[in-house]
Image 1 (spheres, helix red, strand yellow):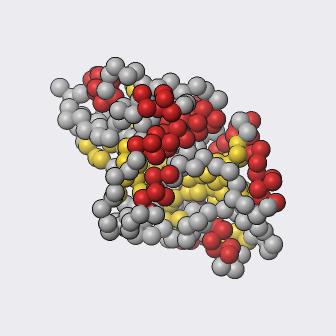
Image 2 (tube, rainbow, N blue to C red):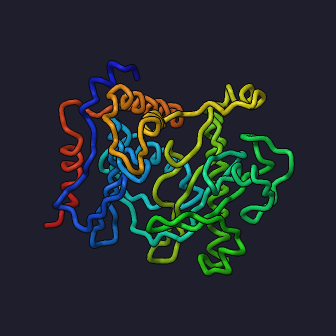
Image 3 (spheres, helix red, strand yellow):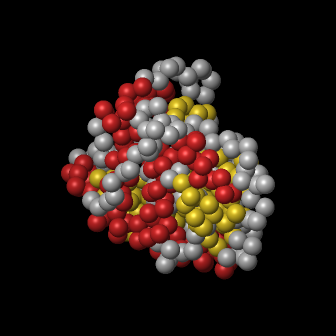
Length: 325
């Protein structure tokens, strides 16, 4: 999508999806949620960009890209693992079953990569070889493919806490999951990741790692929730340039969506200072990356929203059948 098209849609952002007619409101950093009395949850993906524990900007198309990318993958993996999806009444909206989210964050990794304190590359560089209940061999290089994909579970931190690495033994001993739940969840996670890697390879992409969130429905079934294999929950690399960059010790080519985040971090302390005005072209560049990611990941052409109707008005119209009373 060229810059002219992006500029034509620059005004079309969904930065707030407050809909008073819907009950059970819960507003997250990126998604606005509504819980219906019958056990369904309406999840509206806004265009808000969250970083540094605050909202930096609204990126055109971002919410639609995330919702539709997740839809592509939910439909492509429904034979592997049941998911929470019930309906898609709008390009930015999914209606799903309300679940009790399991207290373990699941990340599956196929490569020695990452920058956070709990990433396997960070831990490997510290000299650790035993991590997450698995042992990695000596001699691996940054961004190298692992002998096999591994699950790196962590605690789900709340109230500003930090995620902590877990092993399967710790998960069961601490009562976070039952042995049967862990067996089911780990089977689902590895199978979903294998399907994701295979389909990404067909599109010229490497799915290096990804995050999954699972929950339990009222009947005790484990279901996949939230999102799957989106640009926000996954690390994708461009396959064609991977070998050359790896041999040169360079970072793999990826969907670089961090223009706004990096621009802000270079100009202030984003945890303390006011955020300076962000250039419009920087926001549009980020929108372009999200569109490119959607089209490469799914193989589908992105359909921008109609310029004649504000996105919130369209969402309200499509959700009118869910209004109480």
